[in-house]
Image (tube, rainbow, N blue to C red):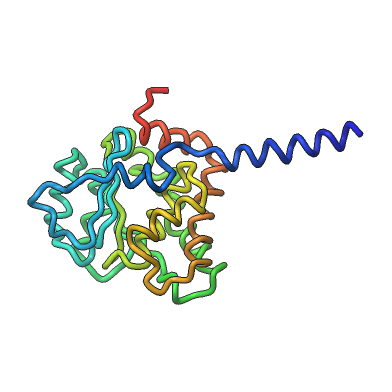
Length: 223
């Protein structure tokens, strides 16, 4: 009987942990944090910007944008060359973007099976989540700026943006709802995008201290 009660409590507790998420994770709340870019940068491709706590969080088509403008947008928010402008270019083909930003190539999520694409995103981006400096969390803490994008921000970029939200503690369901509302699926299967985002969520479980760093920055909390 005691063992049965313990099991029930563990199930309830685990569901509570899964259900908890910061207020910015809820779609309406998240969208209410959207800000307009300075006029000089409003022509950047598929640009959407959000102010979460002390962090300006940006998704855009980096490869299809003027690289100098992408740099200058980062500079406007105090991110410089030594951090790769706290900007992650996750495609290839724009050589100037590859040299200027944190270049982490991941495959197109429509090109390979779901399990393979999850492993590819984890391989390509894990260091940026957990150990590499600059990382997403160090840019959030120190520069207050993170930008993510691929070439056109149709497929790879929104998936990685959702992965970042999920790493910070947003459930995969809330994260995918946000990115699909902002940039749509554009032919990517729901299952593939959800699996990528869920990988970020599980990675955040494994690195709870770094998840908390992002959450504190996104909520402008000191401790």
